[in-house]
Amino acid sequence: MLRVRTVGSDSATQISLQLQKLLAAGAEAIFLELPLAHPGTPALCEQAEAAGFFFSGIGPGFATDGDVLQLQHLATELDISQIQVEHPFAKELVEYVAGERERVGTLNLDTSRPDDRFNGLAASESALAKDWNSLDEDAAWAKL
Image 1 (tube, rainbow, N blue to C red):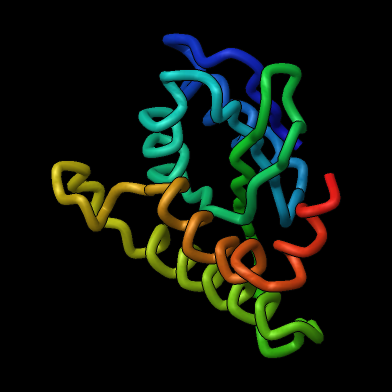
Image 2 (cartoon, rainbow, N blue to C red):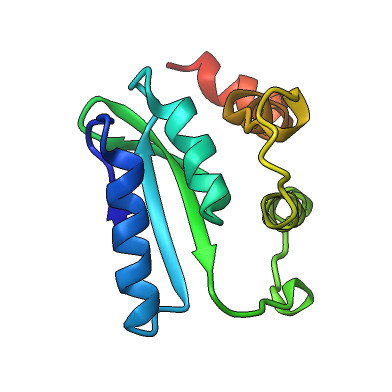
């Protein structure tokens, strides 16, 4: 796992170097965590996507200053039809992550086009709202 705690001017270079080392050592799955509280994260995310990393989740409270954006790089094929999840929301998340992998794999790197830039906020908001906007969730929070 690669974990960026503070985004700096050499972060993309360091990620690329570590990625190459891990791939050369035979790693098939490499995970990357980026701090969502850092203003340099969106640009670093674009650079990570150019290196083949794709969205895989949000880590709530995984950083000392808040949440992290979780990305992954796979050096092997993955048949998502073999992933078994019960909840329909989980199935949507698996499909979303698979779509991100495909998008990043075919990314033309024209980051001036909005469709080619990762929008973690929009991605997570619509998906998570399905669980947050429910009567059960309202009832759970009403007692706090």
